[in-house]
Image (cartoon, rainbow, N blue to C red; front, side, top):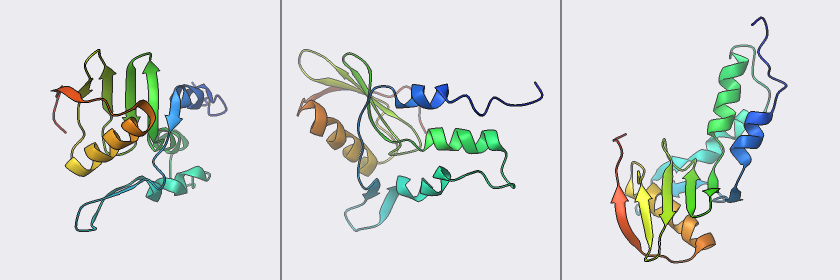
Length: 133
């Protein structure tokens, strides 16, 4: 392929599918005020790629910087952009199953709070770690 299809924006539409709401501002702090995660610091990606960065890398970074609560399918929700990884919530009859609860207690708590602010205060009935980060 001589040219990447950078004008094809279907991947952005796919990334936005199921969007419910975002954490505003998207800065997560510890109890002592220390910043644990600052997704807002990636705002510079909204601009054009500088000549020093490959356009496809810039595009991938823009996709990865999207944050918020997303409905994947009915009953399965994901919070993206609050950590290096994503957290998934599966709704059941007695509560929610949490899959891959992020890499810090602060970002996990922020993700759970974002989920609950839109989906209600369901209890956590199980936690599944598929791998470590």
